[in-house]
Amino acid sequence: MIFELLKLCYEKGASDLHFKVGYPPVLRIDGSMIPMKKMPVITEVDYEVMLEGILDDYQLIKFKEHKKLDLGYSFLNTRFRVNLFYDFHGGNAVFRMIPFLNLSFDDIGLPKAGRLLIERPHGLIMVTGATGAGKSTTLSAFITHINNTRTKSIITIEDPIEYIFMDNKSIISQRQVGVDCPTFDRGIRGALQTDADIIMVGELRDPEAVEMTLMAAECGKLVFATLHSNTSVQGIDRFVNLFPIAQQSQIMSRLSTSLLGIITQTLIPKKMSKGRIAAFEILIAIPTVKGLIGENRMHMIQSYQEAGGETGMCTLDQSLALLISQNKISAEEGMMKAVSPTVLKKYLEQQSIPEETGGKAQ
Image (tube, rainbow, N blue to C red):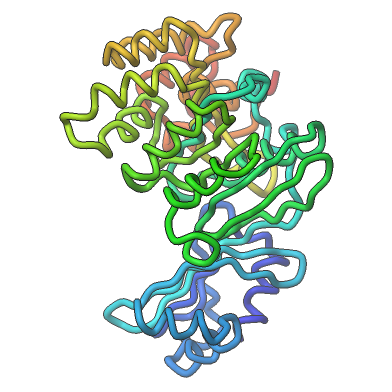
């Protein structure tokens, strides 16, 4: 059953497959959960067969022991990020589809200001957003661009490995936490002992990983990392708040000197076709922004983002307003994703775009 479902997931362009005991399979397509009502309810036997089909002996033992497992799995022309766990009803599995094709900046629609961040030789670039917002895809676009244009040594530390990279102009080593290194911080420390120019950290989960990420940026590496947050300022707060209060001032100071920029994103269903499109918030660590971070005056950062100007900075609500004005998303969908619907409505009124229709394409 599972291979039939993974094939169906691929054919329909679903982002996720939910495989849960006691329920029929569910696909997430363009953000909507769609039950496969014509398919039978998944049983414990189906779940055990699925486990035996995708896990090797070591992974199966590990899952039975910890009742939870994250892994990458390849099938057809697609790679899946798989999350296995148990709940009150029994076994659960979520398969997130990751195309083998590595997308470009143009493919994901990343603004020029975001692309230019990699022109800097060292420092920290953070990509933030909610789960499923496309952070891994944006990271892969950065690595793909560097791989195709520069001769660099790149090391990624991921849990699990998602996009697969083949060496082109660069040499890329991908390490999976729990398999190739015990933890994120140990993986980053190991990368610092090699000839790496660029380090990609799949997710900042704990202070140890954040400490090593900062150290890598301070040691002259170009570092990419992801974090869960809905805005750039929230990302800074989350980054710093991983540490005890007594250390936060020092971490804030170090971040202000190492940060190159923050890209925050969300995915919205397209208005005129199937699929989803990304809206990007861009924060560039210009000297003024660095000073505000170092002085812990984050409440003033948004005004510089809104002003944008030659830096190319923008807020998420400004990005949503632009997509609505270009008729790429509906105003209704934009309002649902807005940080502040009131602010987004103001932007639409300034552009004379009816909130109900999203206006005409420009």
